[in-house]
Length: 571
Image (cartoon, rainbow, N blue to C red; front, top):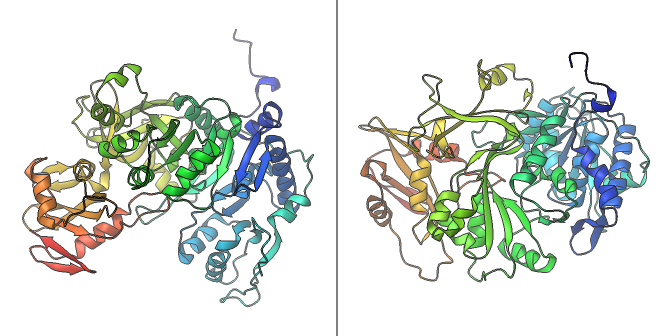
């Protein structure tokens, strides 16, 4: 046994790009991409188009390890580039489409992107961002994505800080496809630990970091997610989750593994989702809890004709929202992950015997994040002071820590940040606070920075939000800490109301506070209530609590003041 060792036949690096090659054989003539009811490709065609794009990318001088950025919504080109960029040996950098020009400019400089694929509707945003790049900095080449035949004039612009450095739009995407080699021998990774993607964190803390993920990690994670979600062969998958968010939780690659039909959407709302479900026979979709809330609160929503599976993550979903969503015929699975893990690494691991429980109890159990996936070596919750595992009693708080194959390689150009996130004992620190129940299931309670300490008591903002979501007039709720002269901090609730509720009534700050006092310990009750038309969110549906904290901090305690057109009651 000691003389046996790895040889070349079993030393092939793991990479999710191999899923596309298999799909081109196993599902050759089956639909791969459908868009706008006019564009449709088979897996054989998608494979060929990705090879052609990869060939053209490499011919532009892109070398192994170079960063290639994509700024686009969920259109076919966006999906294809998840494969063709790494097939050219480059590192894929999907960019959040809702960034402001300044932040986009910072990310382009930080990543040293050599080439940017940009959707035509986001072209002006890219121009503004590039104009902010300092003089002397090399600018990326630009390829334009157009998904229709409408005439589009490419605006030529010059870097305002360097008149000799012009932005170069070299081609549009379809020209790049047509000029590529369909028999291109794509560039495999030298090692499965080679980087495949650079994803910037969503910015809920206002300071995005560049997360570098490996071929190996995303290979493991994609298969892990399919298994945990029990995805069958050839599902019909609706792209409501932005592909730029952790490569669609690695399901851009995963859907090739099962030969799915990918229904692409440039943008969506609740009616669009319901229409797509009916028209295409959608079986699966993903989204943050805000998507569940949107679907559940559509006034004209009717029970589905066939079950549709939804995988949700990104924020702890209130049990009341899960209950309303499932009452329409959606089957909700819940998971937990981070940009740093490339997708979901904890899943609800639903037990069939729980199907016999009352619906509300099912929703409560489903609101828990669950247990570590098979791709995670271990998941635990540690006491931040002692570094030891907390009691499995469902109430003792600690920091969620992970170890496993899909954990990031590190933060780009940030060795200090990388070092802080990795403990000497081999754990990745998530910065999330949670508990472990007696049955071993994990439940996220908050971010470390979002825990409210009032009079020495720890208050989970998530628990307060869960109660607020049970109010029939509450559409969105977020709770943050507000400085208090006596208690140190007190909960401050930001709420948007459900205007679609047929039983509309006037809701006051006092109503919300009294509602909470009847349903939770009094020290947890919000002392301040702010009504807003809509809560500030990232493009992935996460509430930007750092903005809400700034608002709460700016409000003087013990006064009644105004915020916009709303009245804020402070007690």
